[in-house]
Image (cartoon, rainbow over all chains, first blue to last red; front, top):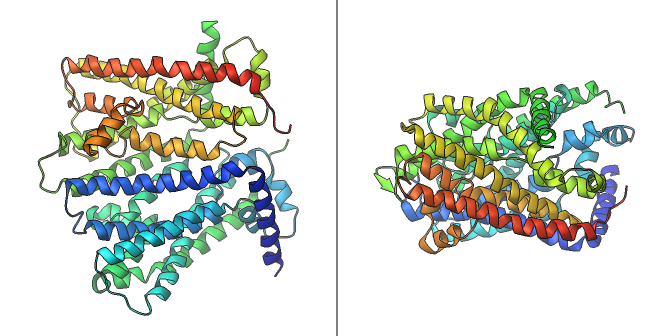
Length: 261
Length: 264
């Protein structure tokens, strides 16, 4: 209940700031969509040169991409901690957060919420819908429920991975340049892992499980017989990574000593 | 005066050296990126010999060299400039006896040289060992490529400076900086070589400065552009370097009258 009240208050605050910087809100929505548009353009250009990609058609690859956009948008809305080490550790804002009663991570998430990112999720749903139609996929009554479950799992995986990499700043005294690099890798989770070699597939499945935020869960709807079992692991992997991330974070924050100035 | 600017390069280089742990992991992740991109292209090529004027070996080389070139030319000058404008410290820079924008470029250069030595070169060696990359045999090609890489750095920095300076005119240019980042990656040919685009898009991209950052140096390195055409692509880079100086100069002049410090 306490957190629900906090959420509402932060949301009110967010709306107020955005009403001050109105143009910025739209630039943000636009830049998010442009980013997604560029990736879609990539897929379109690729299929100008080949009819299938690792055995998957254009509609199927687009469906995977549409799915990927949904958890990605939710994740970007609630996990906007890119400048964490710079802002909270180097400049010392974490001290302020730590003196308050709510859990530090909850505060950080609420402070940095980025609702325009959800526009991407909506576009993702539209792309999934149209690809569903053009790929001629069948629809079962429980598909929407499975979809919600898988999306939740994917969001948790994202959150877990980025939590771990953000928490590294507690252990290493340097602004981490690793995050943006990892961020490039996530892009490869939205292509069928069937095109990669075994090592890369294993890496994207078990080490940095970005395949679970795009390909595997999407493949559940595309080809249940071959990929269904793998796809249903998504929530479990999500719970595992989110739990590990939280532990790593909580342990790290106890080591935090403040920047000193 | 030149000495002072050179000192800036050295200082930034040493500063980067202090954070080197990041860069060891960086090499690994860049190689992984090249790997993922390599397999993606391999799936696209399947049994096609040549696509859009590049065969698979050239494509592999192109991917490897483009990512490693990016490791060198990439910098966050836009973010640094926007930050200094927003917190007001840029006001101090106006009264100091040096060219603020030149200082930024020099700092970017120091960072770039660091990344080239500790990042691009070891990364390229690793990529050559793992993937079928074919390096050019002609030393002249290497020399021209290095020259083009330098130009790519300058043009990318100019685009970053332009984006950063927008902070003078809009209260928050975060979205614009993000947009610029993806635009540079795609339009420069890092993600797809310019020739893969459909005709109309290729024509459009050739009219923009971005191709001078990744595509043109990559095309020379892979041997797609040879002989007399090399002079032409160098000319394109030089043209954009000079052309971009104009908006930067104009913005910088106007900025002096627009300075409006938020808070602080």
